[in-house]
Length: 351
Image (cartoon, rainbow, N blue to C red):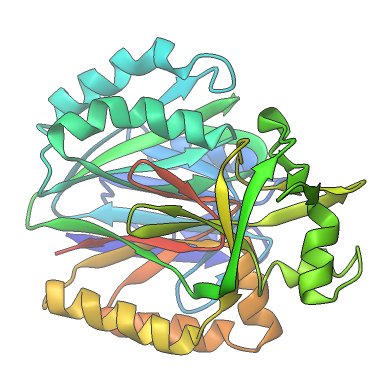
């Protein structure tokens, strides 16, 4: 198979797709002002080709910040695209669509990946999708777009998740997740006074959550919002750590990008040697896949901001380019199989 990436910083879709012939699956990553027009135009240019889209920045060795990016697979994939609606209420209502699509392309665990773009309620969405994927061992990579909108096959949807099943006809697929954080000290917190619906932590070890965070890291209320780039919370899940980013301060509470429940045990994380972690990820992929056709990744917006602040983003994309054709989305939350994660990178590698 082959991966195509085209972009236009000014939002010129015609320029972005120049040279794209006979695609078998397309991902559209657009800006909020032109998203609907781009969805319609893309369907006109490539009628009937499975496609999903969302609002967000895209990249290969450069970043399309406020324009349009198009990622396409061709020459050796079988793909189908669809949508689960009402994700804030009952996405399982539409699960039969996914079941039919899995059967339609003959999906299997070694050669098929599910790629999804979600408008919100990610944890519930992933639980729903995984109910169908887990029995077949099919992996998933995806993320949250901006603006509460996604697209599938030329149509715009709100309160929905657009997904595609992509089968590599010429080799294996495998998903990866990269965590550039490590545990800080021996801090352990029991969360309480949480608001699950709004992802709010009210107290940690019985004390106001905001004050606990401030006292440890010596930051102001405003400083919390940037300190989370270096010191998010973590929740231990087996041998993995789920990163929990802080979204905003609400009185004495902390609103996060991921749900926290009463009695959850949290730890504090700190930024590790992220350049070394990236090198380790690249080495692991090269060991697993000596020959690679494509890598599609989702990088968290907070990772993007951190890397930009440290003048590393361009270097990061150049480093990843040694894998071959690498392209992706800057997301507002990352999906890795059945997990909704923050401040991470997730990707799928095609042999």
